[in-house]
Structure formats: structure tokens, C-alpha cells
Length: 119
Image (cartoon, rainbow, N blue to C red):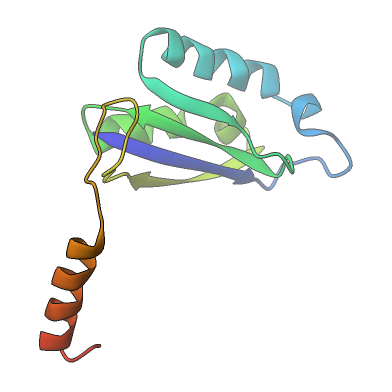
């Protein structure tokens, strides 16, 4: 299962302090690095406006993904809050998944939407 963890500024975020200088950021970086080294992390990093970041995580269960997010040192110490979403990916260069959506897909969906009375 693949999950998206969105990290946002938490209640203990220090205003006027850069993201990389926030308390517990070195511990956060090492924590994520260790999961990356085990092969659990697909992508991770800060947003370019440095308001937070995201982690794309492969996990056996939602409970494991939740435990990973909750045990992040920056989360545990209120620097970040998080939201967790299971990702139902359809396109992926990593897995070479390409649904090849095109006009036929649009036609099928429009037909169904007309039957539902929403188009």
C-alpha cells in the first residue's frame, strides 16, 4: 500500500526560523533517511515555500503508515502536524503503470455521467 504523508507547521513551529533550523529537524531528517534506506520511502522532501513537506511511503498496513508518521520526532514534538492519505496511484514511472487515458475514456465516462444525470 502506498501512503502520502503531508507535513504542516505544528503548534511548536518557531516563526521566523527557517525550516531546516527548526527544532528536531535533524532528528526528522535521520528518521526519514533510515526509512528510505530500508526501502520504505519513495519520495520525501520540503515544499519549496518551506511551509512543510511530504513523504510518499510504502507500507504493509495503514496502521504501520500511521505509526511511522506519529513517531516522526518533528511530529512527536509538535514542530509538524500531519495528514495521512492512502494513495490509489494509477500512473507511475516507478512501477511503469500507464492507463493510457484518451478520448475513448472520456467518451465512456461522459456516457456514464449522462446516465447518472450529472452531465
